[in-house]
Image (cartoon, rainbow, N blue to C red; front, side, top):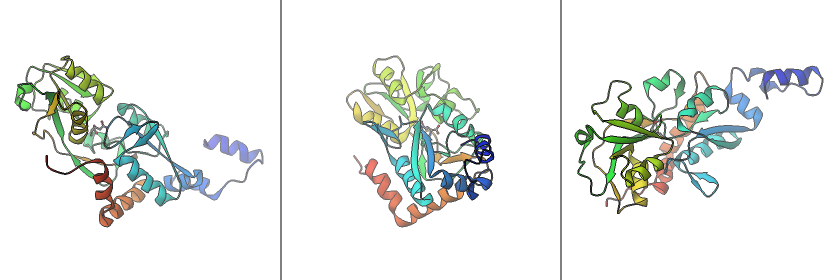
Length: 261
Ligand code: GLN
């Protein structure tokens, strides 16, 4: 409820102001407990971290989010939106945290606070099974598909000046899956995307596409909260508990097979 509506209700004598609401502006945790629910926002197109099983959103991030809700003693609600809308939506107050395989970058740190890291990742190249592209240097002059607004996009477009490849064109897609469809029909020469989602995409079409071994970046995933939100302390406790109890490995193991092929 908006503060104005709340004030109106209190003035109208329709409700007694709960103690938690008084401190809601300062403490996100108190406000969440008062509401009885915590809202995670994500882009559920990123298997194994978040994806749809029928109507349900499942995946590693969802399971971590459930533990966060459990720790807070509230219900978990999930909103599924475009990846590049996640930070604006969080900062518009529409969610309490982002769990979306999101890489903690310095650029994003200007707009959100990140929890401790919970996963190491890298950008990977997917190409057609018969492609002669064998590594990043072969991407020079090629058309590359990426998921819009992701670190793969930033790397390939060389937005932050850190890129070391010189592609001909970057095509941006709302979903990694759409970039892969265009790869399979020859509209792009390669797709650059996070390593585990790349693996999952290739598993669905093993005859047509493959991943290259090269890890192009070193990244770590973290959960984002609005700047200054005290929710980050609860999230960090949950991550620590999951790591120490071995539960994090179990969650990850449910979705990622670590067996060598
Ligand atoms: N890790 C990448 C990023 O943070 C991609 C995340 C995603 O597509 N969900 O930009």
